[in-house]
Amino acid sequence: MQRTVFRSRWLPYVLVAPQMVVTVLFFFWPALKSLQLSVYRVSPFGDKSTFVGLDNFTKLLTDPDYYSSVLNSFVFAGGVTVTAVLGSLVLAGLATQKIRGLAVYRTLLLWPYGIASAVAGIIFLFIFHPSYGILPYFLSFVTTYEFNWLLKSWVAMTLVIVAMAWTLLGYNIAFYIAGLLAIPSSVMEAADVDGAGPVRRFTAIVFPLVSPITFYLVALDMVFAFFESFPVIDAVTKGGPGQSTELMVYKLWKDGFIGLNLGSSGAQSVILMALVIGLTVLQFRFAEKKVTYR
Image (cartoon, rainbow, N blue to C red; front, side, top):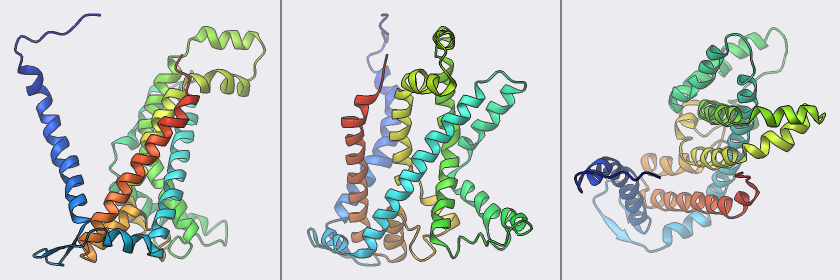
């Protein structure tokens, strides 16, 4: 294995410095600021701070509305992760078939990754809005069922799950296509000779070989669902109807920037960060044992 040698001892640090600056400014500093705010009661104008210890956490853990947002977040994250991973695996399998125009299909499948979450929310808003949406308009000709996510909680949750999962499809598909194309054709041919059907080939050969990719995407999509869901929720439902789609990340923003309760918002940020870190650790502790790396 060839080792890279730099002529200047400072060049590696110079190359890494921009990324370190970005990490400190946009990750470590906000995290430390949230941790600081979580133990203070801050006035709405930010001109006075009073140390209150764990009072902000105590109020949160006795608030039924906060537990509702936690439950909504788990339902949302689970739905997004399952939909994005399974959907991308199916689409990637179709995108590896030998058909005409395959390059065009693959390009179209990867496009959603280049769309920001807020833009994706606006797109789904114009497609599914009960008043001016395209889909409800066409559905009105074939069914009397009213597809109104402004009134039905489960419809609203389903809509934001699909919208968020759609933004992750392109990224997931790229990984799965690379993994599926890396499977030796001799292995699949040997399975055909042994008389294995499509389901048997998938469960015994394909899925175990792409399990490292699946494990990585499940962990990544779960983190995105908890942290990056704010633009979709804000653009489509704004936490409604009622509080049925009010997630933890949306509630902490609403309490902090609308309610001006920065202490509670900071405490919610700390709990959200600790929760996601804990879930990630559990995945690496237990789920990784079922991953096949060879």
